[in-house]
Image (cartoon, rainbow, N blue to C red):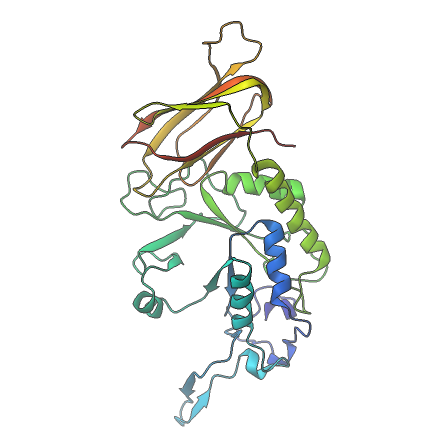
Length: 347
């Protein structure tokens, strides 16, 4: 409903927008999902009900009027709007499933989910589900470094027993505007790439809003910006520089990649296997430079603490011509396990 009013929260005080405003006459959830695919998204969350209480699906819910006690249906739903008969929630889920995008919902009843789906991933769900995720503390798409997978505070806590990875939620539109609005500017591709590195690259799930306009479709300019970001992700991180040899120490702390000829690299990506928890506490990345006379000499490139699901290090020294790269895990609370360690050269 907030898409159809100037106030992007949808409601102002006690004023509820009339249901007649809601008219996405060209609604097509396949169009939404195609944009998700272009963005390289893996899951999508539909705002099934927001602050106004407008529901995107029919419902059989009833409630008693006060003071008469007469039972009436809940009528602030899509079934009482100009697009009556359209179940947006159902169409959204079907479109997502068709393209292998994992559908999720915003504003569910916690008690019901806890009973029926106790393993659900729930934002702010500690105490409700066995798989909670936490808010990073801002809507800029920026996670701190380090950002731990455990704990309930914004940047996590490496000493907490609570596994609760962070989610970084942010907008495509400027000025923290979540729902579509007329004449609202989009954030630049450069800014969105920075958001990607400061969220996904800092062990945070990026939740970037996808906002249809008042027709029910993603506007072309928006779709293009989403695809530009997806194209960058695919071109930069879709493939890596493949070594001729990989060698790891028995204790899982040293990982070396050797190349058969000099290669140019400007960043590295580490993913920790967190099946048994996040155990790595510190690491160093160094390289053998191609012009080095001593092939046993290692040159520092990056260092960090938290890795978790993914840590992207953009090398401060810039692009380097190298013949080998080494990941040295200098501190861990248990045997470290990696999902991957890759190096890249990006535009």
